[in-house]
Image 1 (spheres, helix red, strand yellow):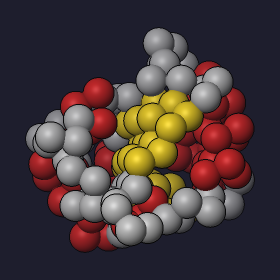
Image 2: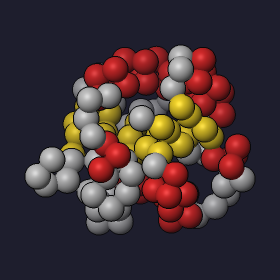
Image 3: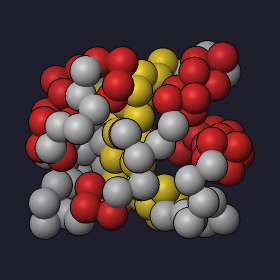
Image 4: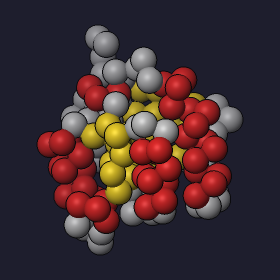
Length: 122
């Protein structure tokens, strides 16, 4: 699973995920800082990357219907500190690696529990 880290998460998170051998890039690394959501989502889809974000808009299936993107993980947490986000991801990612998120799935987590929505038939 390859990840695109949204701009509301520190670039340090992408660096630390790479140290853990995840394929992760930050929007700043691909000159997408400040771009609109649709451009970020198009880039992620074209590159086959699951978007990691704190942004509630990406979890709205009216805007990004299940099956129309390359996957979204929405972290529903109050702290935006890199350590808190990394701790959350270290616990979450091994749990969800077998889900086919790249088919347009959505994961929403508060770092204690998570829910997964996948396209019908998957």
